[in-house]
Image (tube, rainbow, N blue to C red; front, top):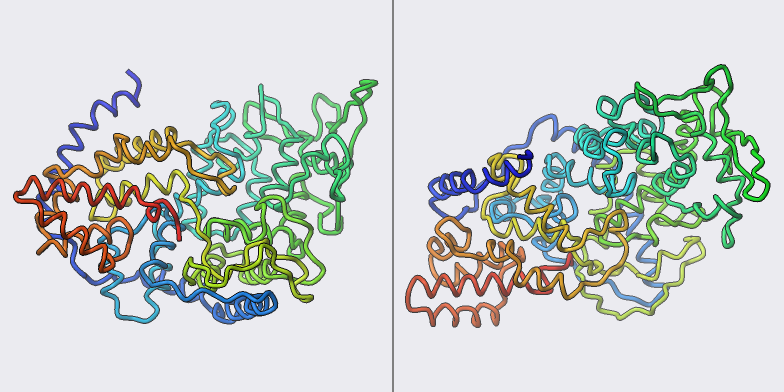
Length: 559
């Protein structure tokens, strides 16, 4: 019996024990308790990360206000704090906040409680794990590939560790491009072996992936011919690929082999017509002075990619982080940017601050979630034109979205399942949850994402919902289990422990939508509970209420 099948058989017994313990432990709904005291070292790190933050946010917002004025659009009003809290939780951890976290947030009287929750969640292991998976998809895609050569799970774990340490992003990228050794002991080497087949490293695949993942541009078509719409030439692509020409997979893992069996190793191109081979020397398509003359070829390329003057590097990660936080990129597509404009634009403003603060990803996140677009309501009051013209100083159009409101973004599959699972619990589902419960969550997430439709490495592309996805939410096993008012469920606790029907309805709205019901909503659902003459009827009314909320458009979007 495989380990997976053994765990699946064990889970029902373990889960029954866990939920019984949770039911006995939880004698009432989570109250408005005080937030946990911050770790002094984490608090000091957060304060360093916020130094001068208001200045860059004000410059960003001021430039954006000029765009709105020039384009004749009006900004939306500020979103409520609870809505911003929901955005933060979905963006940083892939799930809506728990009732426990909402109570802690509302119990904090300090005016900067949103900033404090941002700091708290950036230190949460859930953030490191969630963003490690998001970055891994940009770097190596979703597929596991050949197990012997490529260990995607080890790469994701390594990325999570780097994010937990808040390691500078440029150092992380250099490790991905230069690390040698076995993929189990040196997990960063999996970036190289992800581009392998039959123990051969594909230099062309690595060249295309390097530029796309770390510089935010697609040059793949230049592998076969000069780019028809851009300045990239076939020689540019070949020169980049040549930096990986000496990489080999050996018994000790990834190695750079300048000489093999006494013969110098070079990257060669084969003419498809004559089959003649031509040696291609490593070269970069612009600013060759950024690449050092010493070190391995991969190290030279890594230094060029991450060079302090390479605006493409900082613009690419700023654009991707913006997309992960707001659901769509500041400039689209996220991995096919134009060359940096002559005059710095909004993306440069984010990127230069990121670079000036040691390529600190958490700093970049703090800046973006403090800007107006993240804080505004998702309702656009002005119905702007389809295109937004830039001012002369901006240099480049910030897409066709004016960013005068928070963009409506459909939840990605992992956010849907994360929110479903969290809505089925009043306590926070995190690393402190029971091991058996976390294992059950792991299997449920994988099964749901597979059935719902995994978006793979293109998860940031615009997409529409499908009928099978809606049916899975309406009638799927996981959704049904989340709604059921059994003796150990959140639905059961809301029915029995809330003081009255108003409390039951309000708690359900907070758990599912991170907001309280409006007057009409409250009145309508109160009628449903009023028609219930016994406990079973109230259970059914709660199940119907939760079903309505979890299948609402509001639940399925980040807004």
